[in-house]
Image (cartoon, rainbow, N blue to C red; front, side, top):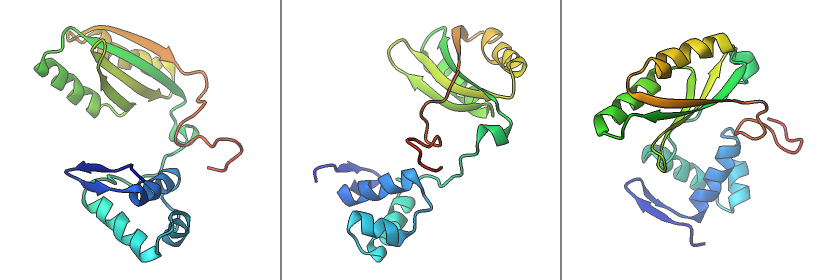
Length: 165
């Protein structure tokens, strides 16, 4: 045991973490299967999942769509540095980045102050326009660096070791 956390969301114990581990791999796993894997009754699993949904531990159940189907063929990692870390500048950047559909993930990071994001676009022409609008012509941005992804080696929706998706 030992893996517990006490937050506003409640107390999670080892059973909750075990349930979450199964759901993170496949949130369509039947509750009876989860129950067998974590050594609880299906009713207990159902109550715990409902509680974690109610208290905000589980915030969404989503389908991750293949980039091939989604029309986004190019994945890009972008590192963005603002002119400074003043709250109003950071909050405005967060709001701008949240609104942009092509930005799939965005993290405000410590260390050298700035953002790391994953951008998915149909082609480099679209990325060039996006980079111009969001970074190059943005008076709040001091520098940005673009890293084009060659191969997605591991991600939540990339099957590993011959597993099916």
